[in-house]
Image (cartoon, rainbow, N blue to C red):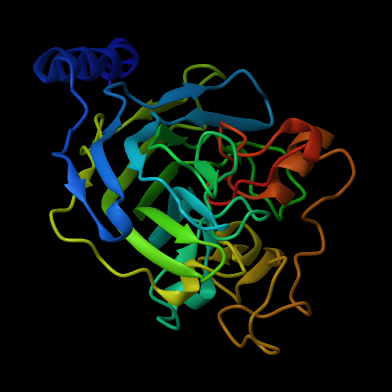
Length: 341
């Protein structure tokens, strides 16, 4: 393709699509009354109607930032006559993940969730890793301590997006030459609005949401830095679905490990055996056979001196990175928000 068309086509695609989309509004729901007199006045969910942005400022990695998924709910808790505590908040789980970084004919790296991929579990927790089973503990939850004499009215909200780093060069190679040719990502999530009585462990599902993030980036590693990558379809994400009938929460979505701790970064060459670049922090099985062999096939040159900048080592060890921390910064210098490499 001529250079002019290569450079201009992505922006033409994006502008045409966003003009056609207009302004996507959040989805609202009608007030619903549940057990214990808990009322959900309104639920809104949306994905920002903007394209994924691509950053080629680093000579070591390509970075991209996806649009945000956002959800909020207005809830009314009736007076609590007893000395008991209720927590209302968001619980999220990943039900599907494909995340591949292709390096031409040499092979691909991939972030994988073995138990999910092998069908051992239906979904995996997307908790912040501290406040199980909640997605976070700031705007994502509200705690009401009884007894109370009046209604408690509040809004709880959450947001999620991905801001990963992908190495230009093959992650297990001694070469620093850019070989990255494509990034593909497809993840599905279920998000529940839940009320829990901490005294009785009674759990009431108030609302269920489905959302999905898809991404494809084409890369020409032979072009100058800053001109290599372009976003492919889908430019705009499908909007979340607010279900009319709630779905049960799988047990694996409520307990450890969360996706961040269970993920593994693999190198899968076109020829030869796969290698583990980064093993999972948490292993549910004492032995994990092919295609997840560790630690004997741990890639020996994954973090060789001089190949990866220190910040990148932290990022990759952290796994696919999310843009917005879900807990106060003081509790951790750096969050490991899993499936966002």
